[in-house]
Image 1 (cartoon, rainbow over the protein chains, first blue to last red):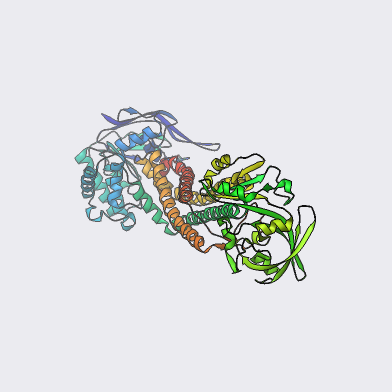
Image 2 (image 1 turned 45 degrees about the horizontal axis):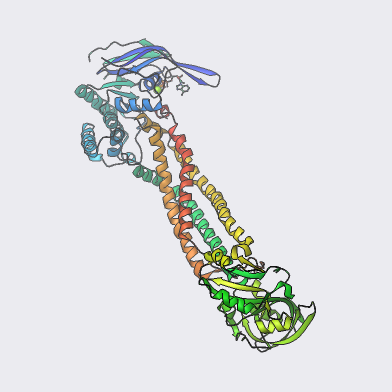
Length: 230
Length: 404
Ligand SMILES: Nc1ncnc2c1ncn2[C@@H]1O[C@H](COP(=O)(O)OP(=O)(O)OP(=O)(O)O)[C@@H](O)[C@H]1O
Ligand SMILES: [Mg+2]
């Protein structure tokens, strides 16, 4: 079964009189358990595409189906609910809440999903262990290195066991070693839990982990990169 | 349940100085308003009490034709046999004191200075005259004194009179003539209200009647009740033919009006000042919202709903409000308590006898007005914060993904 299915999607940004066709009729299916990279030159529409898959944004035209649900007609709250239960995000900058500790950051999606204290504690400990951050659980983001912050972000993205994790250039601000470490963790989680990952990236180090590489150019998919075992 | 307050507290801590400053703005506003409220109430209370105690009493019985502005002692305007009438009224249960008073207009002169005064003939023994028994020096007059007079401290000062000195008193008599006699100053009183004390001299009723030609008459029966709320009941009980019976609300229409309006004034002042302080809070929150655009986007991306974002910011506002208002209330309360003891000296405000004020105003804070203020301040602050909070909740999560 597919986790995400986009049909003939366009996204036009309008700033004043200027229209930018960021996506120009994209159809794409993301299967369960994929570890997929979106690649393409800067401005080709990778981020835009991730935002649409992640229900952070809505297409100008076309259809986006996530986990079997048609999302085009959902209101803000319904989209928030869908994200909360189904999708995890890892961003290029280490998007943690600066006032919360690593532990509390990872806990946030569980709180939003109404999990009780015992469940939360168990799950957060499990997650921090998975990303090897147990000993830094009670540090604030500004007390962590970029790689450590990104690992916490991965833990947070995984917290509610989402079907799909979307990552926009997750390694762009990391050095080689940290970048590899974060990718290793994600790859491992992908294998162990079957969680689907989609990356937007320029980074060859990320691409080499991918089981499928989708290439975008000027808002169009030029290579669908049919899944190939790695 | 999310712990919004924990997050709110930490968020406020990110810009500690800014949070403290805006909390302080609210504190200052609250303290100021509390003090203003205490001052207003003290002033109204003082004014009401002083006016009732010195000038109007709780009830007055007057002749049907009496005109308080004329100070005429022509018999047709006066009550006959006043001591008898007063005695009957004093027998009523709710009445604390009822005493005749005769008012005449006169001129006091000593050396080469003259000052127009109101001559008040009183029954010296009545407890209604207690305010005048506050003597700065000398003794109070007695009922059978024929040469003695009691005058107020400011009058004595301006005429350079001391106890034992002689003064010359002119009076407009009932026949429309002027009579004149020398009196010895027996005592100098001070009621604490300069405006009143400088314009009145006291004679024993019998002497005042004889001097002005008023015969066995008085201008009013001055009545004090045990409880002023009983005025209507008592007034109904003493209605008699040829008299008019007036309660303190009728006698002090201006004062009652001012009193009623003072609450409205206070409310307006509250709204203005709280409006200003709320703006400071709103501004602080707006800055936070703009600074935290990305953070709000992240929270939204991981599934926080608009309503929850609003709650988060309202939690911040209410923490700030609680802190500021609590601190401000403490200061306001302390100021009110201090000036409630010590008073604020204004001196002679020169207000008419319709609205007497003591020279020193003692602030008076009621629990009710303090609680009202605290609740109003809190509600206004939180309501005002809805604007930045809603603004935050409307931000698109897309912002978060845009990177730097
Ligand atoms: N919010 C926006 N408003 C207007 N135009 C936008 C907006 N976001 C993206 N665009 C435009 O849409 C096109 C696609 O942008 P997008 O961010 O998806 O590219 P990208 O492939 O992620 O690029 P990069 O590799 O630089 O991150 C670009 O031309 C961009 O300028
Ligand atoms: Mg991008």
